[in-house]
Length: 334
Image (cartoon, rainbow, N blue to C red; front, side, top):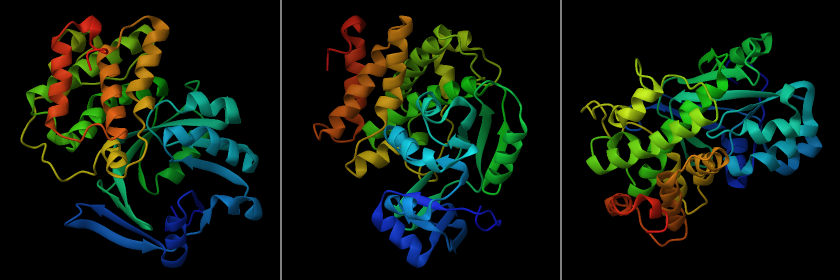
C-alpha cells in the first residue's frame, strides 16, 4: 500500500518490531522462503501504541490485524482517532465484527475474510507472505453493495486480490469451518496444515470438527458459502470425508507459512483457540447443538499452552481415543 502511494501508518504493540521498522524499514519476502518470488524493504511510518496520542491521526480506514483476544481493547484505543465516516476492517480469523461493531458502531465496521494466503512475522521488521497475492473478500455487515466497499477494496487491492460479497457472514462462517478443521490439529501435531489431510487420524478428527461447525452454522440460520464445490452442507454432513478432499500429493509440506496456532505455541504465547473452536462451542450451546469434538480440541490446545503436552502425532491419537469411547463423555475423557 505504501509503495502504491497510499498514506499508511503502522501501529504495533511489539516495541522491538516498531523500532526495527523505524530504523530499517519493513522487509517483506513473498513466495517460497528458500526461493522467493520477490523480496524488498519499504520505508514505513511505524508508531508505538503510546505515540498515537501525540500524532493524533485522523484515520479513514483501519485494517485490524491483531489477535482476536486483543481486538476489543485495540478498537477502543483507536476509536477516538477514527474519522466520523471512517471504517474498521477486521482482517482476522473468527467473527471479530461481533465485538467490534458495538464499539465503533455497525456503520463503521466492514467485514473481511482471508480466503487464500498466510504469513509469518519472522523477526522484528522482517515478514514473510507465502502467496504472491493473498485473496480477501469484503462485505458490509448488512449485505449491501456500497461505494465504500469499492473504495476500501481499491486500497487493499494494492497488496492483494479483493472481491466483494453480499453474504459476508456466510463467507466468514465458511472460513471458520475450515479454520476449525485445520488450526487445532496443526497446533497439536506441529505440522503444517497441508501435511494433515493424508493422515487417517487427522482426517477423522478434522472431518468431525468441520461437521460440528457446519451443524452450528445451520442452526444459527447462516447461509454458508460452498465449503466444497458442488456439494451442499447437508451432503457434507452425510459424507464428511469430502470436506478434506483426497489428500493428493500436490499438497506438499513446507511451501506454506506455519499455521497461526502453531506459531503461537512455538512462541510460548496464548493462542486464539477460544475464538475459533471455542467460539463454535459457545455458539453451539446457544442453539442447542452439541460440539464435543471442538471442545476436545480446545482442551488439548489449552494443555499445550500450559506446557502439559508437546506437539506430536500422539495428541491426535489422544483425540481419536477419546472419541472412540462414549461420545457423550468425550470432553471429560481427557
